[in-house]
Length: 500
Image (cartoon, rainbow, N blue to C red; front, side, top):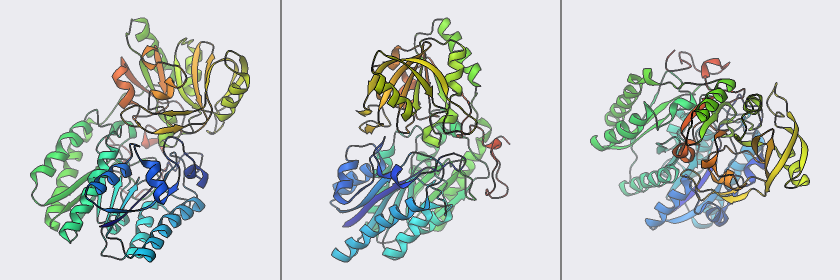
């Protein structure tokens, strides 16, 4: 078997202030940079992403791999037309060259996100799959893995023969999902046919924080209902649920269920039943959300009451993993105003301040203008800070989600401003792995308060060390409540939250 493998990842927040240009995909940050051919296989080796799992599964089956390209960029506003066309053209061009040299491939696996919006396309993945299908013809099986936050579209369903989706948020099953999807592709090749497929879109949006699979109702829906239905339904080949990415203002935004079966009746019945199970639990969605002042006050009260472990606050609306710039100052201002000495904020994405810290050197005190440069209405926090530590941003992640990722976050620094410590990095990355703090000599478990610019992914590595997790909504574009967003393109009849 000759199986082509590749990937193109971006989660697009159409309400975010900064677009994704080609250079964001080309560079290495928390994930490998753009790479082609055999260099791609080297770049993703050992990294916990779907394509690594897929490559391992296909190699176990004795497949000959035809490596195309893989890349990702931090979530942000739309992918520029230039970036999409160059990367999509490069991926498909590599495949075209491989076919010309050695003949048709037997199958294709793609590692996609499912929520890519470009400057000229509402559905980046659907268009990529359409172009792929035009190149390889209707008979070659195509399998794609998607992020749990995919906005699954009719075009994705039409042009891929099977799609599978992460089952955890935090996404600790990325490699497993890639392997599972590759297994579907191998099954298609063995069977010599294609499954019937069904797509069901729900009529409400699920806020990012409410989709966490460690809390109700998603813990039961993903952890029990989905695998049980798969195991107990004869002829059901695959079943997947996407929570959707509500920060994308497109027609097909929102949760979806995908089912693949030996016949259309099986696929339809499974999709209908799983969708009904989600709808039946919609009243259970919800999570308390604090304002910045309230979150800090609650954290300080718990510390004062003798909390033995860190109080963790999620700065959810400035999550770089959802399109936040990572430099908003709402939580930093709240910490300083409350004189929350000993608290640590991670990570402020501010290359200018990182440069200032490196120029000053460890132990020096310098004037800083921290953050506040990229979100409309924000402004830097100005003042003197001591440079406690500097780092080059090169380290290996160790947590359940990013473990093995070779981080390249650019110059980093640990600053102390009026007793509040600030972890500064130069490249966008949400604070989801303890190694990001340890790189600068901060032991996370020993801190009284940790404020993390993340929505949910941080839970995989930080919740086990936390006394409690609080969610705060400081100003930022990763809106915790989709009902407050000014949608223009969403299809009629979609409620902005399950409880509306």
